[in-house]
Image (cartoon, rainbow, N blue to C red; front, top):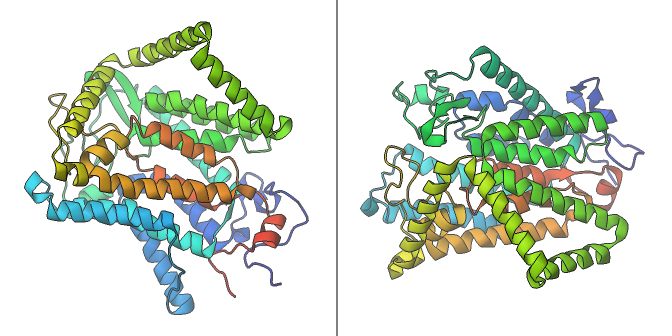
Length: 462
């Protein structure tokens, strides 16, 4: 059997990164082509921010097409998986719906309206198809190191903003994308990081009087999701000092985002991870029995039920009080969104309202009916039953595939639990699909992985 190209044989049972480490640096020459791509994409996040976070999947798909044509004069793939087909259909459906139905609802099919679903969804589906077909896997040390570079850069940026600029007001410069598209130099709330470089939002009453940080991401919610992912990753690092520093840094940066949905969801996911990790020691029966006891006690015993309800209520109130005005606005958005779904016509039930509804908070464009919830707003209100069906087909199929191939994966499945929890109160933020691709490719084992499952890399040759 031929050795997989780009990987050196090793007698170690687990990947501790020794073959990839050179002091604090990574040995670039020891990386496979797929690992080099992932490492570069993560490490260069500040440059993606300066560019404007546009076309990042389009560039990758184009690079793969050029690579395949140069190596094989074409690309041959097996039929796509159910997950890949589901997300591609979802993206195309959103685009088609905007074209045929959106004009009557006031949707302008400009460049951004067309490229957004193509880049964020359709190209993601094509990448998922390619990765599953080629069975591309990357060593987790590459991702650990890449995110460590980004975390250090963001901590230094926070220090400059906090101590140097005193978190004061500033005029945000335009991104490269904003300059190329002729965006006005005047920033308005809601313009985002595609056109302007916004490392943080200064104190503003419209966001609860807090200073919210974005650093190198399109929004504070995107930052929070990435930091939650790094928190989970850090727990798989065997070097205790490195693990603690990465965990501490990511938690600190997560708190600066001011994103309550992730604040609440991450402890739940960490608790589940601990339970199932403990289950490896005490056995599945112990974990299942513990969950059954907790569930039965919480729902059936009045004393315990009242205590749990009070604790949940107090936690929700304390979290809401951190940004009380935002909580009130969100409640009104959800109330009017549910009302819009209930009063929808037959065609709107099937195809959705396509566009967002009326503004809830005057002067703040993002606060509209059909927003601030991916499940309630994006899928059920704007996308209808068809969009909901396409996305659920993708999501459930992907989770099932990850579960079936969980043999040598780190604790990535728990990140999808966090995503599912945040879908209730957040949109489908930009990092969700890129992180999903990373989780699909991550592996923890070298020798057993390649001897038992014959995984391929980008430079696979038969």
